[in-house]
Image 1 (cartoon, helix red, strand yellow):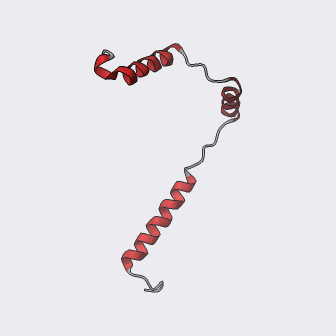
Image 2 (cartoon, helix red, strand yellow):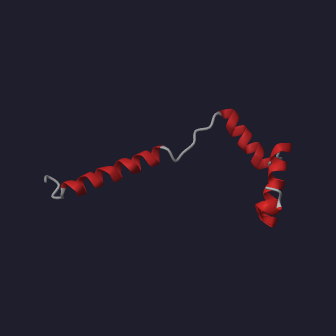
Image 3 (cartoon, rainbow, N blue to C red):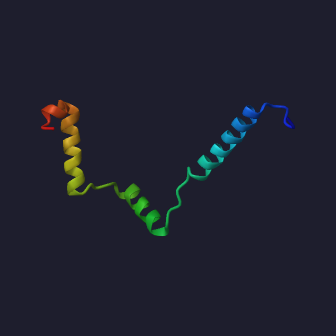
Length: 73
């Protein structure tokens, strides 16, 4: 009653504020020096997928083109 709003409005306002605080605390990533170097290396040099990732990408392309049943899945 001190804020001039109902209890449910007060609780809703507090919940929204807490949710916004939680989201703002978790919408950033902190990288180590090694991780920053790896990130910039990928950005500068491009990403080269390893054999297993390349195989997965090929399967995904087949599924996308032909559907899962016609791609052998």
